[in-house]
Image (cartoon, rainbow, N blue to C red; front, side, top):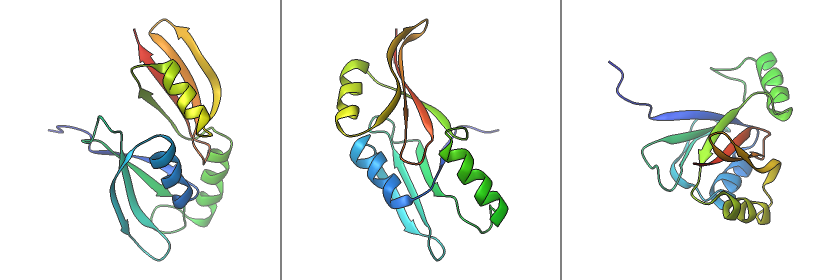
Length: 136
């Protein structure tokens, strides 16, 4: 029986840029950074208060997972903001929103009251979008 999720993947277009975004802007911690293949690496980060889940920042590149055609398609979907999505939770959304904005994080929606709490929406440096929520 499956016990738990250990990692999830966010496909990125540039791992160096993704590293900067997730570590220096969002404040995540690097869990693993190891070379795999010629121009790729196994790069995982964790939210500061959730070290048991790793987010793999996986480069979209031709190889075992993607054909040349698939790389083109997935890259276009990521850039359009229609491929990746996730949700993060914080304790003080207004302070977090201001902090992330000051670091250059692009928000598609500022904090707004919703039935489940307060939520904002931002994009990472590749085009994946995430909700940022403060639960009621």
